[in-house]
Image (cartoon, rainbow, N blue to C red; front, side, top):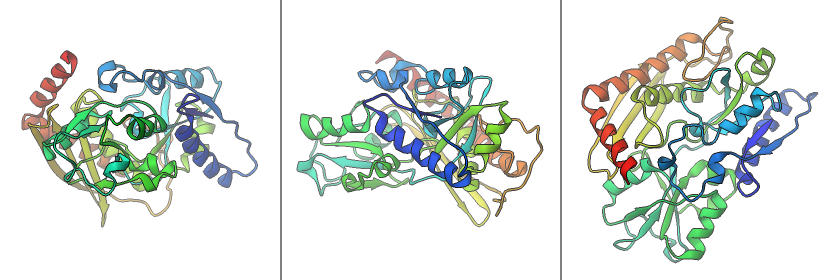
Length: 343
């Protein structure tokens, strides 16, 4: 088993991997698990914004090579790092129960007690995400947003010690996993900032034809999280979005209905478009067997979740993407890509 991360960035990756191992050990007490820490291209390139690098597999390529060579049998990722289309031979064999998918604001010590709204004019806010910057620039025009890279420790150190940033934006789930809830100064709810596709969930990547490992990890699928993330990933894939354009989502499952809100923004947030759609989806109370030859949906294999529910979630994502595209979202995304390539 591998956890994504180098020596400096291992903490969160190791915590995430350990949490999956703990679940597997509880289910299979007779099995032994060896954890191997590995670094990726995304971990090493810390001086360039993710959106500028143009590599869709920044956090997966080296790990997939180890999977392919049978050096590891499963890899734990933050689901938001996994492309919606995986290379041939790989699949997401489990999506664990999602933690809070929202973003959080961590303030410089001198601004503790503030909110983004009450930060002084021209305060600099750090974020590695075009999605966050575009939405927050639109909502808080008195602030300036600047790229910040590095693992959580590095970003917090830059915030606390360098006086360059008044605040930084991080995922709530990562801060919670690290035990740093006390640094959360403000949680950005979806009305303020919708989150990234798959944010807050862990995905377990395996070899697509390794049935034994697929069966082993498949019981970790959380049905509601799985269906929400299928809808989100289908939306992103159909838009042909990625880290180089601002795309965000918000999903809710309630009373058998899956609600998906999705949006696209220009880089500066001045132009935007978002819509909400819903679909009736049966969330199984318990695992049910499905056909053995089920193909992947948006890179995910879940044979123990009813196929009809998965297809309904996928169709919801595709339908919402089509609605936005028909209303002109493609031009917003095309301009965002062009501007991102230029700057």
